[in-house]
Length: 162
Image 1 (cartoon, helix red, strand yellow):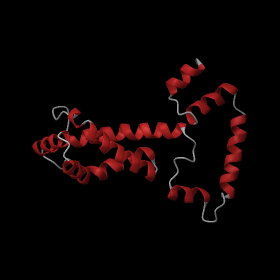
Image 2: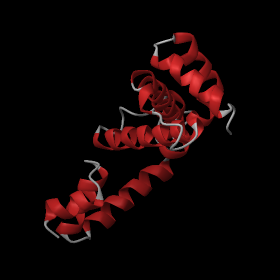
Image 3: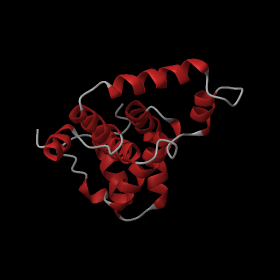
């Protein structure tokens, strides 16, 4: 995946540090595919993956001086930033309303071609509600904190003091 020699990568990043927009465009042309692929693996949503890809390159633009070629290749650095950006986006979206993060393609898959929820999904959601109500209150609270508020396992444990 390393499309540049270490010298080429250093020269390109030096141009980005100097705010050369052409250099950023070159970097994007070289690495947008792998960065998008990483974001898509984490987010499983085309719209969010596109946003995370854009955010990744904006972070590079604003903080290009942080890359140290002695600590790793440029591609590794970019993919690491892409992964963290995608995970941050995922956590943010998990705290938001579930309808705010749905792209058009995903929405069409959710509602089906007829525009109405499929019968199977309706019954699955009803079954899930029934099963959730059978759980003890503290387990329901933990699930709600993790799923609806996007808290990590440690944050849930701290919040519930368990």
